[in-house]
Length: 234
Image 1 (tube, one colour):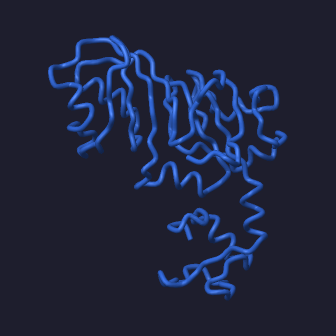
Image 2 (cartoon, rainbow, N blue to C red):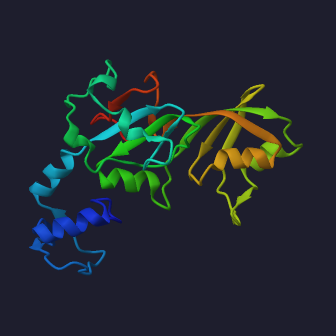
């Protein structure tokens, strides 16, 4: 079910326990039931309704907030979410209430000293789509740098560097002006861009994520948030 994008593995266990999963029209009640590629898995309307009620939030994270759990001396980004910080131009029909924060988790990391688009979701399908090991979703960043780039540095940034003993996937890196680079990545190792830049003679002074897949940060003000609309897909 997870591989087919129907739900997350945790959700699959819950749906099976509730009798909400059918294989070729027959209810499945046993966890770990094997399903052949030719068989059809369907979810009952109750499971579909539960999924539709889950929210995904787009936050313009400021510097000084961690993406996930609180760390000593720093606050988690989820504390920024309340009715007062919702962007006034958000056109989504949902009304904010505190229950939407239950099970809401960041789908991807954004460092404490970075700003930009952070996705928080209750939907396991979206989380898997964005942070699954083989996710093809691009993340785009604007990166201000200082220092002198080594001779073949730009080529190395695009493809040729390794982190933690593993070769990085090809990236798309280009100069936007004399002190700003644009990075487009399909992976997200810890402090990846900063470490990549250090390896080619540059120091990052500011980093902002402006796009995840087809969803852009746009004019969303820093410290404010909006709902992912039904017509938006990553």
